[in-house]
Image 1: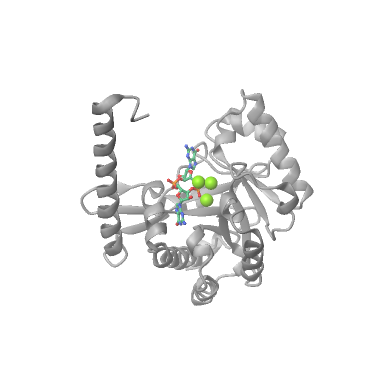
Image 2: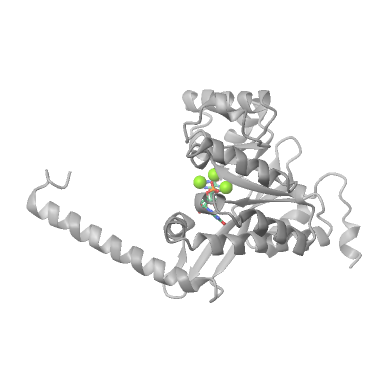
Length: 290
Ligand code: C2E
Ligand code: MG
Ligand code: MG
Ligand code: MG
């Protein structure tokens, strides 16, 4: 494409590439200091049960506040953290911070709440992961069953046998496992049943087409059917409208996440949301106990 647009087009292209490469180098340098400079924070997005509209869990999402550049999106810096190996230390911080926050919410009386944590590929295939998870859960004294790890479908398919082995190891800690961005990674259905998973997260690209796009509707329906027949629960990502929610209810999707209910938000805002959407059987008085 650069060639076709002639000499000036080609120059533009290379300059562009130079700038991008330069930016990546800078980003990586800054990322090296971000942990010790305390530039990371986690925001939390509610996961909501469709039948009851109650919050059953939250997903922890990483935010980087760069001292000069401001907020940088994870889609931009996670790949850099991944290629530089910094993701291992950053990811360990995420796991511990999320477990710590879950402990605080459990202490406030939201004892049914679960915490979903994203894992990157490098982190997943790293030896220390098991020890890191184990320590964070023990140090914070939380029930492992309330902690869930998300790996993407494309990660799973890179090395199927090794992935299955690692998933089984993580499973022995008593935590939950889910597959993120499902539907985008071309996984073979015959393999899916071999993964020790609890939950499938329908990628938001399919949800965004609802309710009008009949192809997306068919895909969502098929994913839900497969998940249920394999004994997995299903959560839809990126639900933005009530029409999308209605269609997901008709198709018997169990849970959803998305801007329709709430954007990912800081701890204080989420605590307020939790008070308004206490899970069934939860006693508010446990709050006044302290
Ligand atoms: P993800 O795990 O699939 O997270 C869902 C993304 O969709 C989040 O973007 C969330 O803010 C966004 N989202 C939620 N509801 C809606 C909606 O209704 N509409 C739209 N348009 N978007 C919605 P975010 O926070 O920018 O994160 C992007 C990706 O970065 C995540 O995708 C995940 O792959 C990665 N990521 C975020 N935090 C971490 C982390 O702590 N560790 C690792 N390894 N990856 C992370
Ligand atoms: Mg996720
Ligand atoms: Mg996702
Ligand atoms: Mg994603």
